[in-house]
Image (cartoon, rainbow, N blue to C red):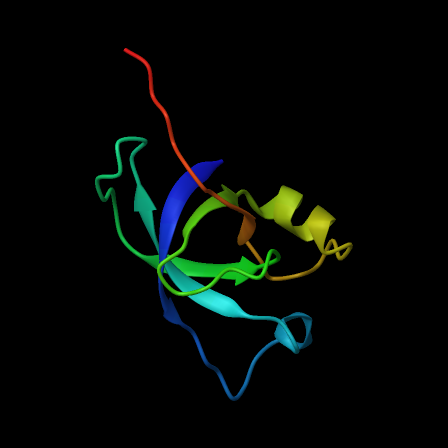
Length: 90
């Protein structure tokens, strides 16, 4: 699992049926210290996240498909939590 920041809504008029009625966002991965890391990508929302939220993402296809109860779903990344606070120790 990784931390990410929700940066934009993703809207598609044509999409796979598994996405119907579900929100998708563009997310930017973050390091634990809050610095951006890597490129943005699309994630399916399962927790009512919103723009600007710090979220926990699961970026592994088979676990994402398991959460959706569809072994054939074309989903790789799912937002699984909204993070209130991150505390790191040295």
